[in-house]
Image 1: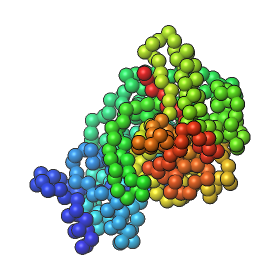
Image 2: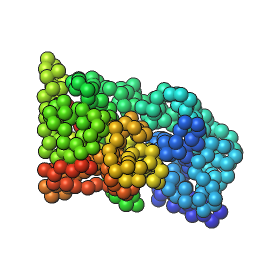
Image 3: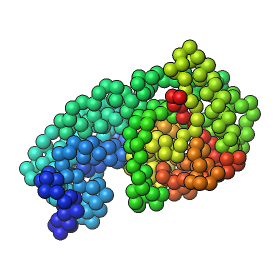
Image 4: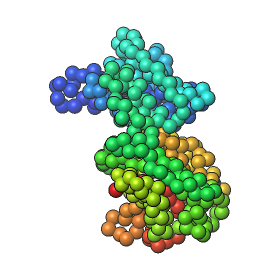
Length: 395
């Protein structure tokens, strides 16, 4: 119990008012059939955030809880009330949140329970069903808010945060041109929020950055899409649905300029619908990649197996790129944010003229594919390991 006492003490801030709040821990949701451990962990992180926002509890930090439980041969995953009470006592928690997430076909079911450690009673229980993975992260937010008996979020915010096609002030999804064999570039809405950006070694918190919403390409720009606008295919690893690579930052910007002209031609009768097409900043890229996850990889974990599920890198790529969208998407539905090709970003690396590159490639080691990792290249360099995806935002 010495561990529990030490953990309880580290959670208590200086003020007496804050100290009066009951302590609460959030366990990892138990992944049932059809759900990966990484996804369950990512959803659990979001539940922790929402329970903390309620202001009703003094939250026990998850990293500290995991350490204490590991030292007592217990896992963070829990959907059983008896085990939850045992874990809660080890953590000196007065309340503990447990639950599960499962999938049947395209239907996901999230179940959460708030348990009193002292009495063993289930204080409240919420079950939420959702069809499809897109928007699942926000469904978990709704579930957690119901568990805390918080007021519902306005419908407009629900639509945006769920990754719908509604943007700021109700703007419709930009009209994207058809690109022959390349099809239309699919966009995903990334809602306003805060990017919690971490150091590249993932050991120390770097900063919290307020972010405005934007649309971003669901996939990396493909070779078919590139050829439709640019005429020639510079890619070394040929394949129409493979990402366009071997393109410089300057050429990627030229592609964005041509696409912007087409997009705004389609909406020429409505000046309010005029859009700018560009590369993402490195912070926009990281914000979209994380989709609320505080882990190294956007599948919700920090281990190599989590990267294996999300992307093509040196150990599974066979030394080549692969068709976009073949790996597990993140909670917003974005694919290939880790590996396949590294992606050009709009901004410079510090005061250098070099431009930031994010995500790692088919040739990258594990740590080069971590969400927070950055590289940089001369804007005129063409590299077989580097491609891009587009961002669309209002003028």
